[in-house]
Every structure is written in structure tokens, then in C-alpha cells.
Image 1: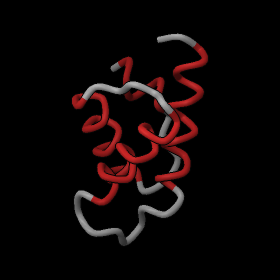
Image 2: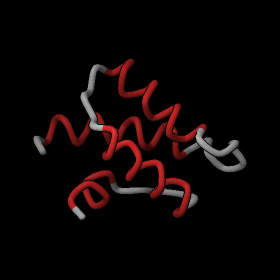
Image 3: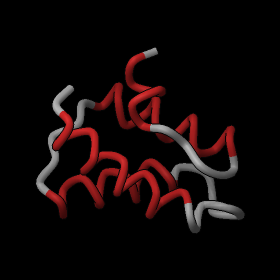
Length: 70
């Protein structure tokens, strides 16, 4: 994954992570998809699901590069 792509992905993850606490189920995934579409970053369905699961499990800071390289 290129540095530019991971930076863009991380920016969306950080934005969604900041308000995910207490969000209804599936909101995190929906907001990730919206953020990626808005930023023009292409992310696969599997990557979106991995990131959403990590955000929901961590309840805080999530490293997109760690999640996607696992």
C-alpha cells in the first residue's frame, strides 16, 4: 500500500473513530464507505469490514496500516 493511500485511509479511519462510540451497529462501516467515497480512496469491501471491526473493537485509535497488513 502506498504511503499516500495509507495516509488517506488513516484520515478517514481517524475521523470515523472519533465519533463511533455509541453509534448504532453498521454506522461505522457506512461512515467509512462515505469517507472513502468523499476522499476518492478506493478500498475493497474486505478492507472496509476489517477497519470497521477494528474501530468497533478498539473504541479508540486504530492504525489502518496495522489492520490492513495483518
